Length: 174
Image 1 (spheres, rainbow, N blue to C red):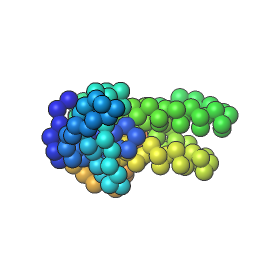
Image 2: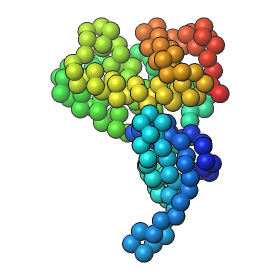
Image 3: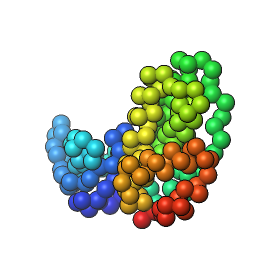
């Protein structure tokens, strides 16, 4: 993966981040190349060894094909929910921790539907916020929209179980 200063990439746990530069540091006598990132949401600085990018999960912003996959997940039917609250929340927390946007989208979809149908516990509300924030931030960047509009589109797709809202709003990947 090639980086340029100012490029936006996605960190699996922090969401969109801007590349600030490539640096070499000496750690325990070894020279290691790092990419320095600044997280868009909170200006937190993150350094990731170039050799560990794949392991950490740093990736480029979603393209049109990846957004289509995301849309498919958001519009799909939710599987039956685990009836026991503790197991359900634990499973959702594990899915969010993967950093995989499709798995995060599935958790967000299920939590939005559960919220609209029955309401959420405080822990589930926190999980929803934790999953929605990086997902919405990436979608907003990918379709060149603001996060408020991206959230409205995401929620409409989940509620309608259809991607018609994308055509109505004229949103496509950049």
